[in-house]
Length: 500
Ligand SMILES: NC(=O)c1ccc[n+]([C@@H]2O[C@H](COP(=O)([O-])OP(=O)(O)OC[C@H]3O[C@@H](n4cnc5c(N)ncnc54)[C@H](O)[C@@H]3O)[C@@H](O)[C@H]2O)c1
Image 1: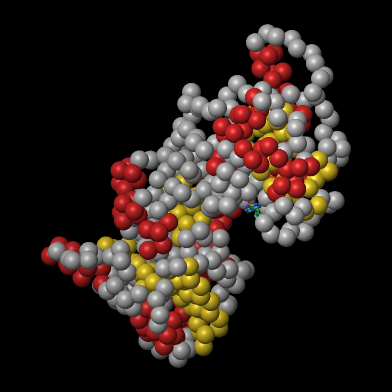
Image 2: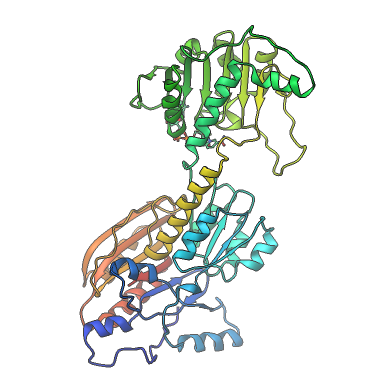
């Protein structure tokens, strides 16, 4: 990264007080080693707000970038030289460009606009080529499940700091490529737990009363008033497999209806209410009238409900799967339903799911008795969308404004306290390759100052370090530049940001 020359009229004059210098020095500097991105320095602009620290952190952003090619041509060399003499200028939060795709919740737009960002929201997903075109100036990208963020897209995203997946999964993002470029990725894995738990409870009652079949008959004009094989749920036993966010919510709701709850989980979890943890899956299968699956997709849960396990379920019991499609052997389930061993099932997730809406669904379960099929909508409610919008947009702002990586799916998660309210204290954040010796090099640079606090963590190839450092009065600008440039030049550096 080439250095910036501070010849702006906002600069504090020589011999000015520490506070005046503080106002004139860099507020936030960012550089990303491998992308060839250069970002200008910015002077701190006092806000006069009560919570000064918060205000400063929210302002800690950067100016438009200048691109310096890895192997400069004559034209780019000239551009780089011009950039190195770029004047400092006042920070303007409206320079932060946010691109939201796939009709992200309005609450996310409000949160990001309230942070001062420039938000563009697009209704649908974009193709790779369209995204490459649109992402070049974007600092914050928000997507849902249909937009693919490939290595090619990330290579074009020279200014990108963060991707918010306003959904549960992050398979649509090349996480390894994002990590290598220092782009954090956030999602919202649990904001829709309540929605799934409620739909599961609805399915328990609907299965017990054969409501799906009655509904189908009525739509064909057939009146079929029966009570045989229809039951109240009160006093029945619900077996929950996976007592995590959804399973435990469901446990509480089910008990309110007078249902007895037992559960199986691979870890010991304290029961809620009167629920009981049983020692094995088989024990639950052998005693439950309803078995509901709420496990993650792992090698251990793949096809965990196959021919043998279904046979261990009580005759006349019901199976519900709103977890992942790979957990149940669908052919075996269809067989158990048609043979009358199971009295019904409700399935929301499938081994293969259509990518778009339309008449595309096929499954051995179609036409099975008392079988409720839904198109992966367990978590799809307005409330869940709003909660996801709020959670992800707040994570985006915390990352951009404070370097908080807690909850990131691809970078080590550090929950950070706010920056010490001292005009001489800066926050240095650095993403680097996780190889021996990097911390020693960085700490050599920081060691001459007072390190207020320091955290670091790694996950495989990438490590993240945050240090709040108090610099010396009167030398703030030089020292800040020394720290920033010293870390930027490390061969292991992926990205360094300095917040002031
Ligand atoms: N249908 C939908 O729309 C929808 C929406 C949200 C989540 N989900 C899915 O629901 C599932 C559960 O979500 P969650 O948020 O409750 O997850 P969670 O991580 O909070 O809980 C999962 C629980 O399963 C347990 N577990 C893991 N492996 C197990 C095994 N082999 N046997 C027994 N227990 C095991 C874990 O210890 C954990 O307690 C996930 O697969 C998730 O993808 C579906």
